[in-house]
Length: 313
Image 1 (cartoon, rainbow, N blue to C red):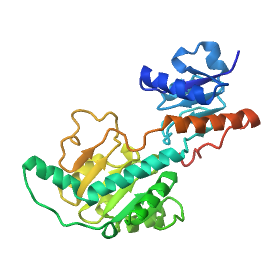
Image 2 (tube, helix red, strand yellow):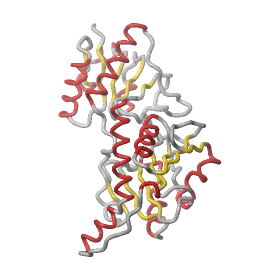
Image 3 (cartoon, one colour):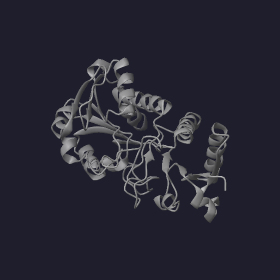
Image 4 (tube, rainbow, N blue to C red):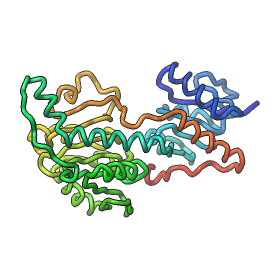
């Protein structure tokens, strides 16, 4: 049997059809088959799975897999989900980094230029200008300095924002001051007028932005979470907003998605809710990356470099 490539995790038939079309065009010599359409023999023959937001049980139902290629940067659903070592390859894509950096800059401007206050004033029919703050008078902290954080740092510094960053281990990023490790996090947070969360979700980062770390931010600071919902403790965030320590939060990710209709975040005056749109996968660019990885695998027989299971990314 010709070896199929399994496609797993599309959210709808329309998305599945689009992904099949774009991926097949980028890899005309490969045969992609949606998991739901695979027979037993095809599932046993598959050596590679391309996944979006997969059910780990479906991935585990392919006993012959050699590696998994994610179409997302986040792979937390797959880490530790299998009873055998299985290389998991994150999508590392320049177009995604560009799109995310664009979103970070856009929503940083939204906060720096007092857009939440003006939106509230419009609802209340209040005409009151606020003093202008230059980007150079606003400190932005990046929680996470991987590919996405480095791209965001370049955009922010290019726009004139004072930018600092934190990572788990030491990193040098052009144009910004960096902090690292548990001892460096409070020092970085104390510098922030705006904190941007871009770190992956791992056991160590789950609940990292809690009451203690929110309190370390400057009074009146704001938060942007473009990473994963469980990194920020929702109850602690609401409490910090309610007591006025935080001025606003822009949230694009949540503990459960879609956000439940009865969530207090929808109506909280200090929260802007976004439907997970900050860093969408550009399928043309992603397909080119996946095709390149598959060509290298066919040539060498070696899976691409995967995540470090101990770190979770």
